[in-house]
Length: 301
Ligand code: SF4
Image (cartoon, rainbow, N blue to C red):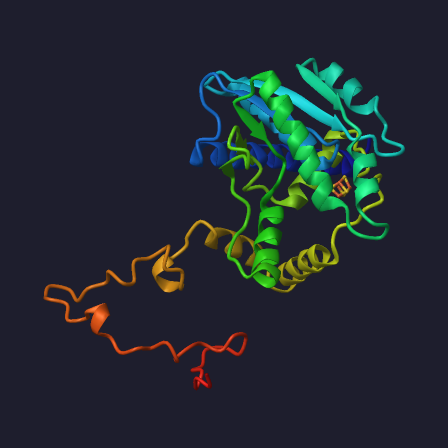
């Protein structure tokens, strides 16, 4: 090997070490910030065969080897019987890793195909069915945590999808109770950038299973939001990080959600408050224009 080749290799090795450190630091930080995993937890790691879930398992294994708390990791994959699904890939990979795992086979694909008309997106029903199976498996395994591979960019995309199309300021929670109330779901990759996961998957040579076997596509809206975020970051580097930081620093008093801030209870400092809500004139005719920016509705009705 000549000197330039050696230098290139050395540089790549240093970059890989830096990336590993960053991933471990960010995942460790998210786990600590949201108290995701504690002593004695049994963590069921949902493995789809994509870059995110492989990385999740990989980083959790690294962290566990040096953690001061003891916790178990069990990898679970749901084989939904998508045509062409390479069913040997994950058992082979997990077998070599030597960790406990379970492959659950359930043909949700046929159910989705039967119920969703041709050409319509299948993801909503498919994910609901998948969730149901994973909750059952978690119960059978006695898992105290279900770990999912969503990352920082998934969280931001979801935030903007809700903002643009759902009329809600809502992203994805790093830790939440499952909708059936039985489980605690965690997202240890919440602080991790998707680009880093792509690079990590490439470096670690994970045997990726393509995610388009079902024939469904990401919705157009999600694609557009993803592209919008990428374009913003390209033109204004650092914007993604700034927006993501904002999600951890919400100022309820400067928004308009009365569940977040007690506007009604706001009193004049150091004196009697003369605002008696019952004595206020009827402001009902004054409303904000919907979609036309702040303005006063002249109150036609
Ligand atoms: S992309 Fe396919 S496997 Fe994934 S949720 Fe949608 S229908 Fe299901």
